[in-house]
Length: 371
Ligand SMILES: *Cc1c(COP(=O)(O)O)cnc(C)c1O
Image (tube, rainbow, N blue to C red; front, top):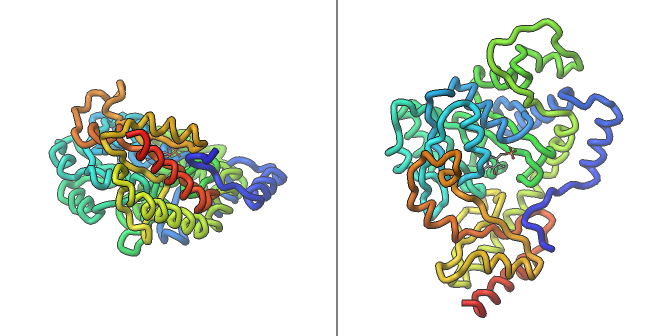
């Protein structure tokens, strides 16, 4: 079976975890500090590691003092994690439509949904594509709202030669098992805003003030103060040990992902029943590879056919405004017309070029014989 996605775990990750287990200090300590400082060197900004990408988003929002009574603009077309992170803070996610050519948030639609309650916009960098970041910045500046980037798909991606995470307002990454790099589970918040950094650091450890510094030297706070709601969202040394190792291997991962996506683009171009989405893979490190099938194709049949041929595929994503919990959101034309035609093809660093040739060949067989 060619898996849709897969963690790339080797002997170095295994040895790194083994070392932590032998030291028997499993919680948040030296390894987390080292992972954060390695990330800081890359992004040249402050970094706080947490237990997941969802936690990163929730803590970033809360640390902007956004919550009950506030609204956040977000594309409906994202993983439910983005929506749950928003509603966890008490804020209301306001579903925005996407540009059907990029599958990224449609700023014109976002503009229409602005109200006095709007406090932030969360652009989602679907598949690693980032779109019109300049325009998002202008939009946020003009309306005095924050930008919290859901960059779960975009670790390593560049915009105008700068890494996502190295500029802008607040960036959240995910290090879950199948993202561009993993720490088992995990995520981080990156920003230049020192008040956000301080709050995220405290909030990840139940709001205990300044506990991070103690934990990094193997201690903890016994007498302390708490000023606001916190959570158990810190990263463990086991997770960080995996992350540190993955970071060293990242340039190889990035190169592989780019090569595979470029090859898909090249080969699928010839099939007139399949559309691909333009991403500049010199800048974009793709997390997933999504195609749009012609309206003549039933996507479930294609998916079944590929599965019969030992190719696993996925559907990213079911729009959030169609979920019961978020159904207060109104209809979104582009999102609703496009999502049923999207299929994600296998993309991970253990794949070989011959796998891509095989997958495209099977898609070609399907479109030639079943339409
Ligand atoms: C993975 C993902 C998240 C959440 O990250 P976790 O680490 O799984 O909590 C958020 N948004 C998007 C778009 C994602 O793909």
